Length: 118
Image (cartoon, rainbow, N blue to C red; front, side, top):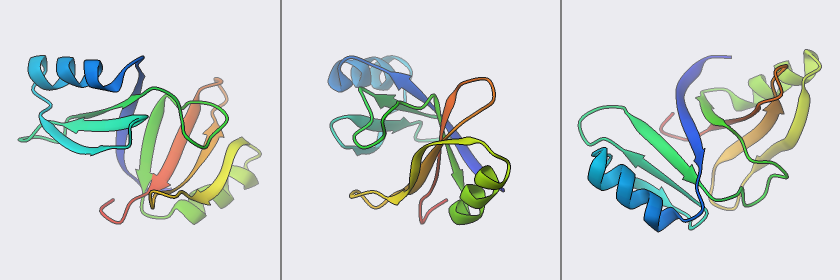
C-alpha cells in the first residue's frame, strides 16, 4: 500500500468550539469540509491538517488516524490477506469517500481511504 497522506482524528465534543481553537489559535484556517460530525482544518500555507470528529457517521468505532492511499481496494485486499480485523467494510460513503477501517495489532482503529485528490 502506498500512503499519500495521514491525518490525526481528534475526538471532540463540539465541532464549532473545536474549530475555533484550531483555526484561531493554531492557524489551521482552511476548512476543507464540515459534515457536522467531522471537519478537516488545514494550514493555508502547508500540509498541516487535523480532522475533528464527534463520532463516525457509519462505522461502529471511531478511528485514531485517517490514511489516504491511491489504491484503497489493494489496501483492503492486503489487510484481509494478512488477517487484520476489518472494523468497517470497504464502502463508498454517501459523502463520496471510499474507505474501510482496520484494527492495527496494537488495537488502534485506522481509517484507510481514497479521495480523488489523494
